[in-house]
Length: 131
Image (tube, rainbow, N blue to C red; front, side):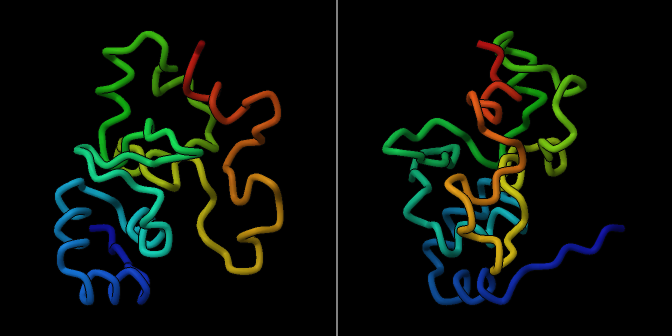
């Protein structure tokens, strides 16, 4: 059995704000996404499923099956065609699908901090979206 670890920050957030914990737990967020959301809660919509909001648009669901989405949407790359840098956690989309794990020294070094794929020419977007 795989041992899951949670950060102290995420644990304290969940303990201090039960309403927040109730909102993220049903969404099935993984430990890495919970850690991200513990600081970036303003980047998450309140809709179900939870969605990441970038530049005012909330369009990237969290905690949902990529396999299910891609099987119903021909505009998405099938799972077997994804760049290995695109990480699915138990087959689901999470913060670490598009972003590298948090490392304090690297957090804001670039214009696109911590992206898992170079976004030149929308590279990160087209890694999944075939439009």
